[in-house]
Image (tube, rainbow, N blue to C red):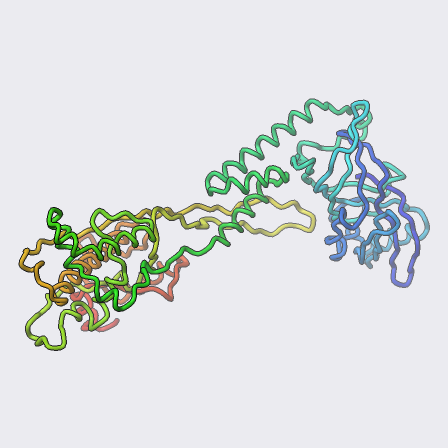
Length: 492
């Protein structure tokens, strides 16, 4: 480390503390050029020093002789008040400081940013615009009696937005220092390589998450890759929620009542019947407006939820089939399977085209470090879940005599039958998707299966909990036979 003679402004023997100056803007020659520290509050991050940073002897972490009580900038110099400890070594150093035997101080720091201010006679001069003091040391042998600046940790240097690892810019030994010469072309070559790598990595991340506009801004501002990753994560976290508005047109009750699915079916089944086409003119207009509003294209007609919801408002499936004057025994609906998944799943309506949902797959790694040990970077891993639309249709044959009926009951019968069967098919597809999904916790009951036991259910719930899944929303889907078995079996 480099050192300087500190200025003792006051000595408080009762409190065993002194006030000293540990840094100034005096130029200092490095092997890669001349370094000038900027001394002001915007350039120096005093956070560490003002958080009881250690006072060391000769920059040795195992020789703590006191603590930094406070640090500040005054008169173009960085100053600090330090207090000595009560250990045997601390008492020895304190005595030598009071007696004027030890007069030199050095500061360990990290350079965060610096900029080239002058290039003359093949020597570059850099002003350090951002730096971070880590500790202050009392030292026995000064390398420079005018400037007390040094570093004791590996660090990163940011030159005009291009980061250079300190491992690539190691300070030469004292005997080699005067002979070291800066290879300007080599430094420029490495800087260009680092810049190309930075731009390439930022562009690749932006391409993956479709954030090219942010990449351009980050490259221009000299943002490093880790900072850009954090910015992308923030953007994805703040992404607006998916629009889940209902696919309705806002039709009034009178307009919905006027709509006839039978007229539409009649027109579709008789494309050359002019009268059928004219009768369904209103239904075709509604379909055209729905396609325009929702950005969808229908091969036949698009029926909005305003109309479909009309038949699902009374008494469950087929409820509206029964008018006030119709006897209940005149129509008996068939017995069908009951939907399971659709009542538990989250519904996303009003969508068109593919959607992408960001997902975090790996977290930051944390670990214990020493007082002045360097940290190792770890990245948050992100990906996307892509969902694409699937079409599910139903085709059913109806006689012309049935289509000729104008009864609202017949129209609801057709709609309810189609909608109910489509809903059950979606349910079955979802169940099979879950069963075939990799990574789902499975509890084996044997090669040929077996009646489930209480411990099987406990094991299932344990697997879900160990995977950190949402246990509070957990539900069971079982058939009627298994349900009856469980109800009649004693829990052991």
